[in-house]
Image (cartoon, rainbow, N blue to C red; front, side, top):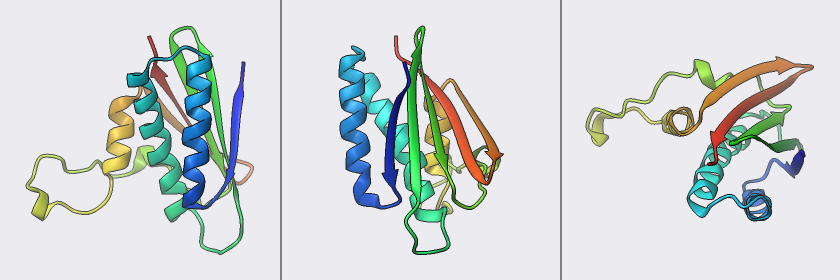
Length: 136
């Protein structure tokens, strides 16, 4: 069954996502350690959309779809922001000293490493990021 969360592009709306993910996961009997990973992945992706996805001050809708299939939680995030493929983003430098690392990219690095897959398409002027997390 598809579970959908819709917010507008304001950082304060991240709390709505956390609350709804928590309810969904508890109803689906997903363990707390997996809930933390799910929240982190969705937070990183949605934060990037809100922070960098728009070059106007208008209200935009961000849709987060959750669906369980076997032992995987499929997550799809849809927005009408600027075209951005996170898969093409430069990998974060996690090996050099913190003081000399370039800023940015760590969130996408975490997403890539915490998920089973990550894909991106641009359709009808919308970014669609899909990922899945093993929940069992």
